Length: 361
Image (cartoon, rainbow, N blue to C red):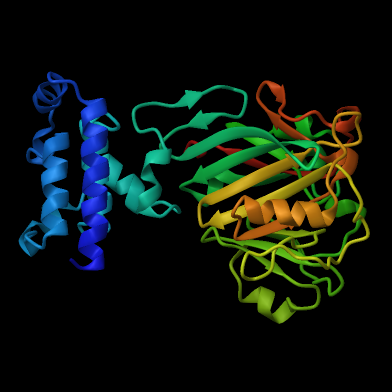
């Protein structure tokens, strides 16, 4: 048996196991009764399993490609089998709208089941799901400190925004919460790099350039319009190169916490290496990000050293990670207020990062 067939056979076993749990005897009949005509009968868990079996054993016919391409990426494969099962279980009702959303978003199609296609779920505490945005708040403890991680998936780059204090470049410093409240549809937010305290540049926010000079002294983070986050070691990003990049957001604080292979670093371009509260922007792949806050300066939380923070980012499987302003600045907020337990309730800063719902036209 080829490696491909082995993989598909294993997936088939997993699908059939899921079917035995998710579908009582009458559920398949209900799914068939509710099928949409455009799905041409591809609505049940049994049909998904049959389709996956045809892929595994090479009996799938090329002329069926278009019919079975549920995710509309031009290829029928195991992800489409998952989508069929998702449909059969009530995960979505309009397969055309589903396919258009999945094929037209930042996230790879295999991540489709992180989103909600049957209505928005908003906990107001940062936990949120719609067809455009998914945020899950995860709390834990690492190296004697509490951490709060917002696991984020977005389908549109416009969902990842920044905001300035007092709603203007170089405005008077304000709280993270007050800036968060100025963003329509805001779901989760955290402090940024406090750009105004050290105006190194470049400063690009939401696609607009406010300062185009490029610091050669600090690591720089850049999020482009395709959703890719890249960190540049100090001195590596040049002004001429920046002009050729579709920069959507930039930050100059740092340091970068992982090397180009996603491994923890031991040497850092930073003046703040000891234990402290921390704020990190994490990156997995286009459309999949993380906001990470580490509490500190309390009897129960020491905070993390830069080296511990780097090691933690590797354990979280980030492929790229960038340290933002920390200490008393480290604040994460949602609609209901603080997500973490900031030292002395935080302090006024000059900018935030936030995730929002796709803005209305």
